[in-house]
Image (cartoon, rainbow, N blue to C red; front, side):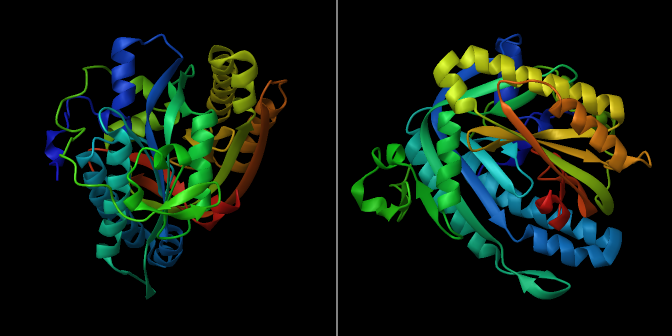
Length: 372
């Protein structure tokens, strides 16, 4: 497996941004959208929320144990994915969004998915307070042309949306724990011997494709570029100082879900869709920056995407609920070509930086987040 030490460490923001983002800013910093031909894997891990709830009883020690457990798990999974040339586009709390490009990207993506399932199984049950918890994973894969957007004002946010992204989400939603569901586009490029029966709109992957040479994403350094502008304003100082300790704390969490991108791309094109996503992200940034709320990042979703917001993490102002609601009303009050709705909740969550040292994110997780 590729040694993590090969990742360049000159920029302290490097672990918080995908390789794609560094290359994009170095090559075409003013572009707001790109089309990328490749294979994307949506990997969802179940069990971290239950583990977080149990370890919350142990206070700061429990939060540190959870961060270490998640970091170890992701490090093992990413080592497998990176061996097949993957780039981690997004952490979705307890999910990973991986991009495979280059020669044989379909086979590399499927082989990585199968090996990641094996790696998770070898970890075995994880001890918590009480009965051990066994992590499970569902994976969906699709190959095609993916629309990727780089938008925003106070920070540059990478957003993945459009028909190909929707197909990845459909595959993952179809997959049950322990399963890998691939789209027909993926199945059409694999030998029949590795294919399982149809399942929903896709097919099960029975086994990994034949062995392929290791093709690590970590082998070559990313182009030199300052990635600090890609970190949300409310997180920059905390993340770059290295002073963010994992903890369980009371936080107000919200999700802004936007839908309609697939039809908008079909009707008006990618450039017009980029402009609408740009306006939504800029409006959200202005509202949250004005009211002391943190825009944690974006995530993939069916026919659109999600923006995750937090008030009370990493710092609290004492008026988290009201500030969140005011910010949400400002965003929702504007007329838009995209449909936007919000869900908000408050409760005790895990808050902190997760992931191995070479690829990290700040997030919140727990039942309160799921309810939002």
